[in-house]
Image (cartoon, rainbow, N blue to C red):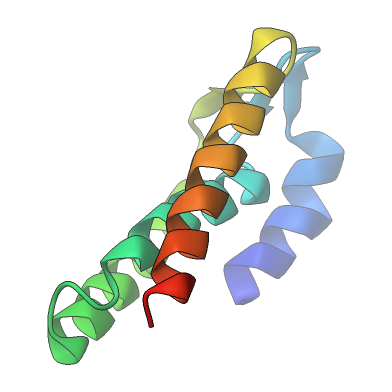
Length: 99
């Protein structure tokens, strides 16, 4: 939570390196990664999933405030995100119907 606040307060104001590049991993990317990871929630044990999720959140938090350059999503990335959203929605919908 603290790294998200730090990311929003500092990097979103000063983090734009060029018109199409951010400094640090944008918070939007966290959601894309976490939605995919939650597909494995019922596949592995709850304890292993909790540990993996905690480690992943720490890694994402570090990348959110790191001095790495990440591209902004624009152009053809929108189509990739739309496709990703439709596929993930279909997978979660199928899981919901089988419960």
